Image (cartoon, rainbow, N blue to C red):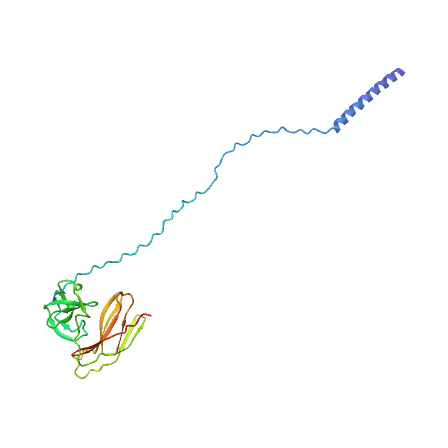
Length: 268
């Protein structure tokens, strides 16, 4: 009994020690840090680098600067001078054509030419349509009423100069009292030279003739301006190659007194 007790006690003691060992082992295992399972690293193959060219908008082509063209001067129209001739033949086309002492319808009447008359022209004015007719008594006719065998411009310019107005022996020339300008308007005034009774050619004769070489539209125009007044106003523009000028005659049936030169007003 005692032996059994002792045997049992010995077994109990061994069991106890075994239990303690098991418990101790479990305790150690429980206290040990738990090993965290680390998943195996997945090896990802590096992506193959694909070269993408940079996106850009092409610049417009560089503009080639064309050097500014230097404006070429407009060629000046060359006017071919008409060769001068001594005379031209002409035929009267009007039924009755007045031939006058001066180059205009305002001058004293000398004689008339009938239609179909053959005449010889020996000169012209520089600025209107009147031409000088040869003969014992030279006189002036309007070129619109004749037919010429040639160019009127080929005749020599004879007025003023070679062709002269008959001088009045009975009256003095007038005096210019003023010559003024307002822009392109020129006004000339002069003193009166009264005529004696009977010294008018007829009722249509005008007492004064103001001859002006004036500029209009870039051209010099010859105008004989006749009047019974003591002033005239007319247009005179800048832009002509020759300076404008003029003179005043007193007209009476025997001839012309003067001329009196006009002191031409300048542009301001």
